[in-house]
Amino acid sequence: MWLSGWRIALLVAILAIWEVVSFTLIDPFWISRPSDIAVRLWDMAVSGSLWTNSWATLWQAILGLALGLPVGLGIGVLLAALPRFASVVEPFWMGLYSLPRIALGPLFVIWFGIGLLSKVMLVFSLVVFVFILNALQGLHEVDRDLVNLMRTMRASRFYILRRVQMPSIIPWIIAAMRINVGIALIGSVIGEMLGANRGLGWYIQISGARLDTTGVFTGLFILMIMAILFNEAIKIIEDRLLPYKRAS
Amino acid sequence: MDMQVSAGPKVVLEGASVAYGDLTVLKDVDLVLGDGEFLSIVGPSGCGKSTLLKLISGLEPPAAGRVFVDGAEIDRTPPHVGFMFQRDALLPWATAEENINVGLELGGYPQADRAKRCQELIDFLQLTGFGKHYPSMLSGGMRQRVSLGRLLAYEPELYLMDEPFGALDAQTKVMMGRELLRIWGRYRKSVIFVTHDIEEAVSLSSRVIVISGRPGRVKREVKVDIDYPRDLRAVRKTAVFHDLCSTIWDEIMGEKAVEQAADDPAEAPA
Image (cartoon, rainbow over all chains, first blue to last red; front, top):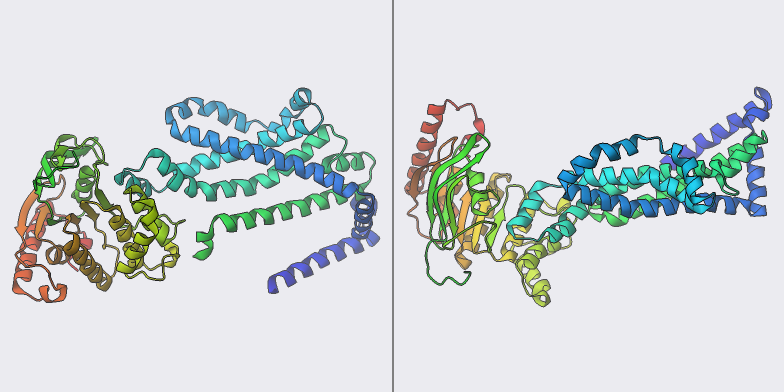
């Protein structure tokens, strides 16, 4: 209660200062103003474009994550299981990882068009590496004693994977998910900026082109709310998956 | 192979050595563990006591020599061996029940009877009401009891215990020792109990082996002529007990004086 009270107070203060400044110090042409953004939000909500644009961006992010998680996890498990193979391919995939994958955008547009698929693939290309890295690191840090103990009871490799390794990397995967939520939204928005006819990235892009700062800020505001809600959803999933952490 | 009827020795080590690279941890260890015997192993820290258990459980291959369990030379983890570490090594994401269930699953306990058996063990170990608790919610002593429950659930014929109560406070340690003797008295399985606590070793076991510092080798064997069942508190007051403890203590200290390694206060008796 105490915390949310202060948070709301801070938010109100920031919005009030912004509003006052836009009437006194700085022309709203540059910074828009909260009341204008609120009106724009209302207009977009009424016209339905709030929903279509938000959903387009969110859906691409979700699909990219949904593809990146199993693929990244699978590759991570594979690399952990085959250390020799992993050391051979390491420079290659680290090279890919270091590449600013935004630069792949134009290529994805050529390959996958300007529809849904190119954005999903861009998101995927961004998030998959975080999943791989975290899965690998998580598997690397599995408690040796737990594995040894299972081995003394003649547990199969599959049993150890299922009962020890997988549960112990869940916190790593959730951490990756948290990082990736923001990255996925970036990928989704950038994909829309490269060529699209809907989505928040597209909306921000055309608003900017029209020097409509209110439109740009409205798009940013919706993205921010979306990221916050996304993160909260991950927290709920985390609580569900890790009851033993909550207990301590 | 599992069906050996003869009451031959449970474990035999013949000139077994273990090395990590150039470092020889155990050298020429000969050891015979009788079926149903309770053997303790003491020695300075880093003498390879734990390695000895890893060797017998197949986690560590011998660099030289041979290891037999139930008369058969082992090449991987032999069946019916239960291991217990100083760290409880419980799955943190599993409740006490689920952790004990791991022992039942891996021990091949009939699925239909697992829930019942699990509850029996929980009651037996005085964990009633804590079955649904995660390890993080339990005290060190309770965690170690869950760990013991998992071991019992696996129904091993040979218990390898690596300072299982080493991290517990003195009272809990004695209580756990009493628990272990109760279990041993009931099932009469073979036990190798590694500890650096000489009094614990003497009070629990029927024989104590002293291992020398690096590289570890068997330095001395002491028989503990105290009848079972033992009352641990009464035992600790007897003259036999004190004589045995000081004999072993001298053995280890002599060792240390030679090595000039007396700077390790962790080896002081409790």
